[in-house]
Image 1 (tube, protein in one colour):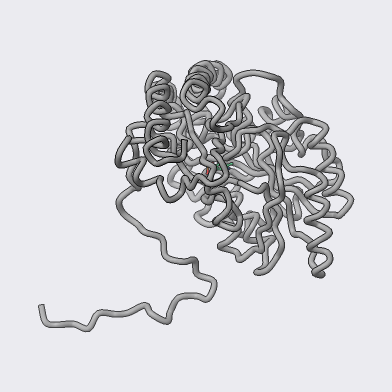
Image 2 (cartoon, protein in one colour):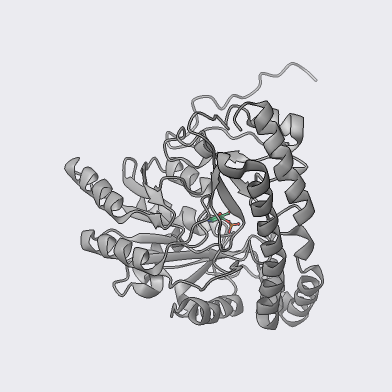
Amino acid sequence: MADSKQFSYDGLFAKSAPAPRASGGAAKRGKYDFAVAYPDPDSIPFDGLMEGLKQGLDEEGRDLALYAPPQGYGPLREFITEKMARDRDIHVTPDDIVIGDGSGQPIHMLLEVLVDPGDVLLTDDFVYTGTLSQMRRFQGDIRGVETDGDGMVPDALESAIQQASGEGKKPKLIYLIPTFQNPQGWTMPLERRQAVLDISQKHGIPIMEDDCYVDLRYEGDDVASFHAMDDTNSVMYVASFSKIIAPGMRLGYLTAPPELLSRALAAKSGGSANYFASFAVHRYVTGHLDGHIEEINDIQRAKRDSMLAGLGENFGDKAEWSSPEGGLFLWLKMQEEADLLSIRDDVLDSHDVGYLPGPNFAPDGVSGRNCARLCFGYNTPDEIYDGIAALAQAFEQQGVL
Ligand SMILES: Cc1ncc(COP(=O)(O)O)c(C=O)c1O
């Protein structure tokens, strides 16, 4: 082929384009993979999903020829409203729901319609990376608010709002994962929720409630959702099938007041969430979801207990960790000088243990070097126990334990 001058995209990127992201090869995973919040791979209900898909295709498969309404598959939206009413005391209609590509897309849609560059966004001091990167994508001024074992500290929230106000800014929203928080594992008790809600309402700042893990409860009682506690339309709510069926299904959902939902819907790309997956999930969850959740929670409880036992035996009083009542991870805190970020790759190479260090979850991108999130969803209980022993050995060799 003759030499051809290759086209260059230099200078063409939009000013608001995100920074490049590496494509291709997945990040190296450890044998003991405590890095990513996977659910248990062996309990994905393949047979039930296959059957559900077949039934859905038999009954409505011809609809795949159509471009479906962007809010998503109606019967699945109906199921979601019934589940939300029963489990979370949230009473909305299927018209108030948008199904998205996981709950990540609904979060993106909300941020897209709410956030201008420089807007102050309040989050927990360590918080889910996916939302943080979307907030950065829209150039929010993300401010982490101090938390303790019960979640966001109300006085600290009040101070953060006052500080923004002193700068002439009113925060745009407060993002909360009140149940089995990612990455810290705590659940915010009712009184704390009420205190945070009171502050948000007093200042007229909406809450984005992310209830992604709420069904994965291994002990204790459910706590009311912010959405159910609020009677002023100031809470938007997202949740997902990722952690109770599988992330690969890519189905999550959003409910918000109509004026916001209609704007978010306008920001939704790609039309309706996948109908093919929606058929399978809808037919499967109808009548099977409760049993399935019970089953996976028994499995995950054993995994959590194994990780807690391993930590108790290998880390003793040389570290602190959260003891979550559910979800998929806990938060490990080593002595102040430990730098779990700089040793992460060595630990992975030498001992085959993966984890995510604190700065991944910090709004400032640097705090929390002595902390790490440890997920217990993927490995078996025995592997988890061995993996924690290997982690302790690696930390000892690195001089942080
Ligand atoms: C707190 C939280 N919210 C949202 C998501 C997004 O998940 P998905 O898009 O698969 O529903 C995750 C995924 O790990 C998460 O931890």
